Image (cartoon, rainbow, N blue to C red):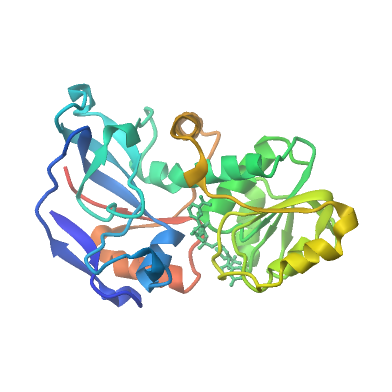
Length: 323
Ligand SMILES: NC(=O)c1ccc[n+]([C@@H]2O[C@H](COP(=O)([O-])OP(=O)(O)OC[C@H]3O[C@@H](n4cnc5c(N)ncnc54)[C@H](OP(=O)(O)O)[C@@H]3O)[C@@H](O)[C@H]2O)c1
């Protein structure tokens, strides 16, 4: 089978399409013939070498989510899965391949009418958005700012906050056109990356969901209402300054909260339940994964170049012919 491997960490050109033996499903695993695999911000961070501390080695296959059809199961796995169309999270890698072996516990039945490409555009991002808002103790009627809304996490957070009754859903983006598309998904105010650019937007918010972090983070802590909560779900601009907590201490009397959130801390059962609900909502047209473009697996380098250039709104989806 064809797979994309990172031969050298750094620029996208360090990835290469290679022929590998098809995986054999082990105990409790299913073999999925991949139709579509998502290109995520995390794949880019791994490929760039930014996450070298986590021990990724040359030969790593990127890709954290796939959709396709189960073609075989290993010992102890229910053979009824064979022939079913599924979505699955594959963890920190493995998805950029024509065939992937995953635990059957990671499989979700694809509801009728939901395309494999749309499923991976929605996939894991919806779960992070759902539980990120819950971590922020978001309640209907509150105002929300999504910082870095143009990626898949932000797109899902905007939709969920709007659906769950936010009074305001402000977003930051560097692009006017993306801002208009975010309005179409539920944003009420579009700000530039510094948080300015819309004189009608509120100055402060009850909840800030931050995908960006980086040097600009402290300035957004000052944009919280009393009892406001900021939750960092991504660090696309790198870590914040070491002394960022001083903003919280200086504003002591406003009872502000800062937290990080990773979906890895959500119990598996809860994650599964929300994923199933969101895939069903997407099949009814109530939630939308935004597909930036569709490329064959062989053009993964091109997809990563577009990610590096900041050109992507939503998700690039790679297609494979594993079946
Ligand atoms: N918490 C979890 O459980 C979880 C799970 C999966 C991934 N993640 C993390 O989430 C992040 C990826 O999420 P994503 O794919 O939604 O994000 P993304 O698409 O990589 O970035 C989101 C948006 O941030 C803006 N941006 C990029 N660089 C910026 C900068 N230097 N300053 C300000 N804005 C900037 C860009 O929009 P504009 O150009 O329009 O401003 C970009 O579209 C990674 O950090 C990944 O590790 C977290």
